[in-house]
Image 1 (cartoon, rainbow, N blue to C red):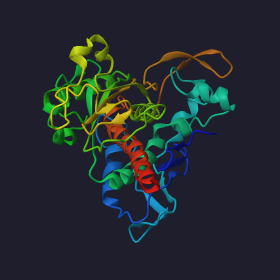
Image 2: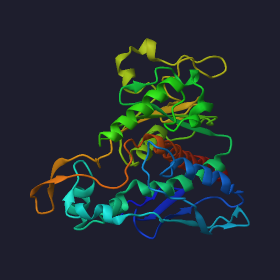
Image 3: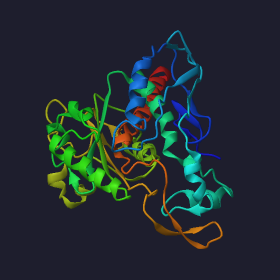
Length: 356
């Protein structure tokens, strides 16, 4: 199976399944001499882990990461960093009833048709459980980038949406509520909606916004490796992600050029930043911001019509523990994937300067 590695210089390869013994990864290309803060890594994992609040899946995992190579006395050696995380709270019996059934809008169908078999326990390899590896690597990438600050938050759940620009939000309050929305009034409505959706056996989607501060000028390439294109690729690799827009995004298509252009101030900043910190595929030194749309998850606790592997019409209904809304736990995943992209470009910039 291809497609298990992300990155060019700072590379992450992941392995493992949702209900296997463990899930893990190999980070290649991390420079030597980086002092690793293990508490920061565990903090990021705690933001993603299941069972952290009443509005997410109640699967209980400590998500304690074990490193077995590439770090000596807390400092990276420059060799591949290997790590794994044990799966300790699987309930595979909850999936026995769907081992021959394709859940609507789920990867069950495409994986089975492509590979001729699938691990139906918790979604196997295509479970969002795999993203725990991205958070480990993303936390190390954040520590490598040091001064660059990556902040993601939930900006909408269904129709409840933040109208304020990120500049006018208290981004320090994101972790103050379980939905990770920096507005107390809107977050309360989001939480009530998610609880209502869970009780009805359904699911709901929304949008995560991300702001990246202190980005140096010059990250990204002008043609096929544009910075926003790589960010889009990274975000759309996350489970349930269905849309990406940077800067003004689709709303920019409704403006005239005179009103849309970012007029530079004498300090190089702009008032509107409709470019989202990237112009011509290259960072311009202003805040990068983008949004990622997530669909409602496919596994429902209510009955829907579907087909089985013999193409017979049947009924599907989920059992066990599932997120009614993926957004709260996806916030650290969005940050981690952004960090992996920036680490790649940051290393490339260091490399090209050394070669001149």
